Each structure stands twice: as structure tokens, then as C-alpha cells.
Length: 116
Image (cartoon, rainbow, N blue to C red; front, side):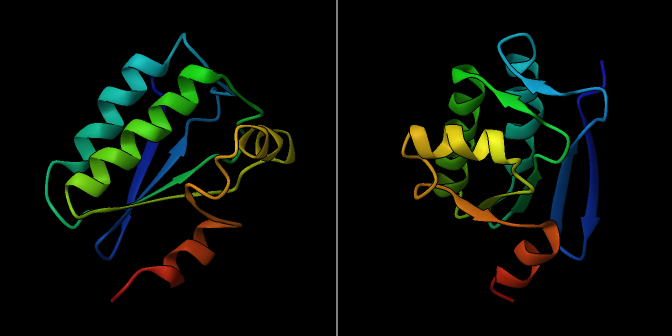
């Protein structure tokens, strides 16, 4: 099952969920975590995860986000999240995670925030 589309812009990896994925929940988090964690195999990796099209994230999905952030920090890498729907942003705020993650409105906004 295809979960992500991955593209590179200069040295930045941009990950978008496949259009078939509307919910980031326990059914796909294990595979998603494996694929996303592999992106941080080298230090100083810059990753943007776009949640465009994702209308729901459950606790296991947020667990993956936290795990990725920890992996990124341990590896001197950067992990940013963009294109969060209003519904999902409500969950980030409810869980007090909107201040924990580096969140941008769009992928383009994220691209401007990386150190060059």
C-alpha cells in the first residue's frame, strides 16, 4: 500500500500523504513510522511532512510525529509539518502539541524557514 509521495527540493525532503490516505490512524502508523524514520538515516536531514488531504489523526499518529521529532533531534536533523487541516489542528491544540512541533501553513512557508 502506497502511503507517501516523496520529492526532493535541493536538500529538503518533502513528504505528502498519498491521496488515498485520509486518516493517519493505527491501521497505517507502523508502516508509516518505518518509512518516515528511514528518511533520517543521515545527520542534518531536512524533512517537511505535509498533511494535505489528511482529515483525521489518532493518538498513534501523534505518537509517530513525536517519535519522528525525537529521531530528528537526535540526528541533528529538522522535522517540520505543514498543510494541517482545521480539524487536525484542533487536535494538535487539544493535545498541547501545536507549540511542540515546527508547524507551517504550507510547504513553501516551511522551505523558507530552513537554515541555508
